[in-house]
Image (tube, rainbow, N blue to C red; front, side, top):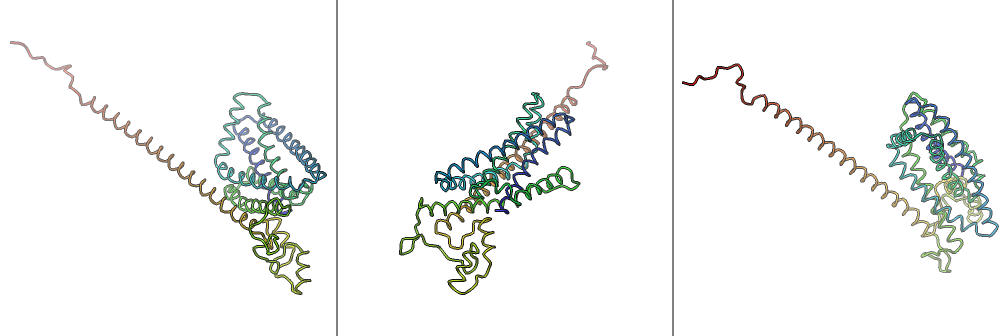
Length: 343
């Protein structure tokens, strides 16, 4: 969980820092630093609101636990979190190049309209989004114990790392390749999302919400394969394997705990878990390929429009020169010449 908490907090906190940093930098550049305090007011309110959402959500989760329905709520959280992670990855990969210009345009409109409330609300909303997403993701990776995730070393380290990276971006002398940052972190977040989906399928099968197309002769859900000999999911599974076979697995169960939490690893997945895991990667690959194709077509269209505009400008210039030349070579003026005398 700590690794998941680190990656989620690192990514979400850095996105918030990046957005706020762009706004502050723009205000300073155009000589409107007097608005900075309103930006920070909005950010502070958003942080407080995010903590409030965390407390409220935790109470809801605890309420479902007392009713014996927490597992069903957990299924929903896992599925929705996987969807939100996927959306965030796709959205940021599409928007990160245009983020600065779009934010600056919005801020310019706010400055034109005037009003400190508008600036506070804008800063509040862009920060609150990241905070609420973090709360939701933490609920998913911790089986509903949000406070445990927030207090983990992973979350604290992720927040610190995001702060350091933010300083390097806005105060450092070297340029940070943000595109590379988002691509690398997106790969890990895709793995986390796939793991969340697999966990959701596993919980549903444990609760008999869904069955399986692949069963044992006794009617139980069968495993596609069993890798306990190679990498057990947990030290308990490792101990059971040693007890039953008298042999040690190749890798320690602690590694399995890490991979299960981080990637959704399963030593003996069901058919549905196996299909869901790899089908998700195919789905994301198709989305990314489609997004790149759309971006490529848009770029090609923009180049064609620029080329056409250039050709039109050249044609207009040529026509203008031709007209000027025609006027210069027109009928000669008779001024100052002798007029024939009539006989």
